[in-house]
Length: 275
Image (cartoon, rainbow, N blue to C red; front, side):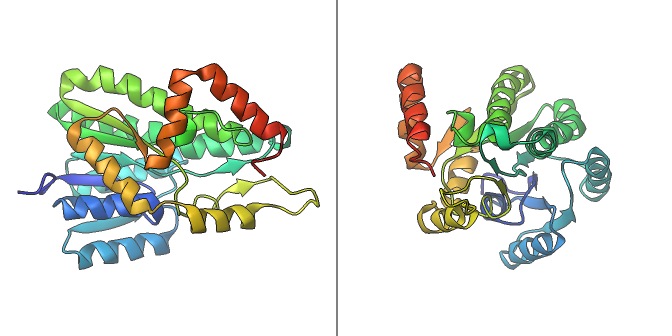
């Protein structure tokens, strides 16, 4: 029997990239899928693809940064499915630029989309898991939640918060037989840059968003690989899952010598090697 056979799974931000591949990987493992995305057309498309794979699936357009809309989704979900076995909290956005360029509105935007979106879902769905004393939770953070990357300070802030949330939650929920894993992707070929707010510019003042988007498309890893690593982490009960292999060297360097990593990160930024 497949590992997630007949388990009910929610995947947020499933309209593209890692979220879509997480949904597909769970479908291959026999799960029933409830998928969300802020873009209705993406929701419709992923539901179509999941059903073509033979999975039972239902889509919900949701803005996870809006508590009222997440509450509406929770009400609809429990009316449609009644119970939850797997919670993949993947919805999020990107933000890049010098710290002095960011406004309070930028900070609120990324914290709402990357951190509050996860907190809202946990508040509304975790009680059912605790009541049943069963379930698995996968939180998509980022490699930028393991190492501080200059030019992405607000983004790193939210992703470090998610790693800390997952680690503490993992310990706290162990007595309920609920496993929590956190997925930390590196450079992946997804819509993260295209859908992001990016204020970095070259010496001529030209915004670098197109350049970074092209870079991620050309050199970014396949999101399907990251999704497989994430679902494998859930199955094996692994706490922190960097993915893919290119994420490991910096993670290991940071763990072995935080001071050396900080020196190299600062040098890279001062020399302009990142942009």
